[in-house]
Image (tube, rainbow, N blue to C red; front, side, top):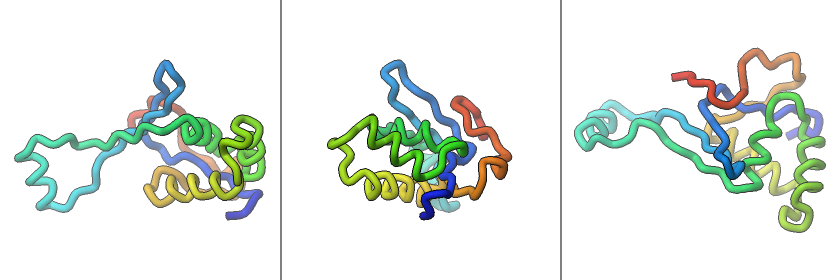
Amino acid sequence: MKVDSYPTRCPVYWYTTESGQVIIEHEKSLSRFEQLLANFLKAPKELHHPLDEMNSMLWKLIDGNNNLAGIVARMDFAFAEKISPVNERVVMSIKMFLDLKLAVIIERPEDLSWDVGPGIDHH
């Protein structure tokens, strides 16, 4: 991941609780059989990802306007020793968001063509 790249939230539904915790919600991707089973068992159709304090701040920073270098610097300033080694921890968390298809990497802020704000329901 290049320091001048812009990690960016995908258009997913998310919100911040009163305590500042970010909760991300998105639909489960189920096979046909899993869908039938989920319907039968009345299982929830959405996943809720409550983020810890550090990942909540990181989520708010990956808005398409902050490059990786800037994000690392702000996370280091906010959490100091608690996030050491900051570069590795931030990159690891961003990769987790990428793997979950909750974020993408864009080259420039101008490439952002979707709303990354909270409460946007894309279902």
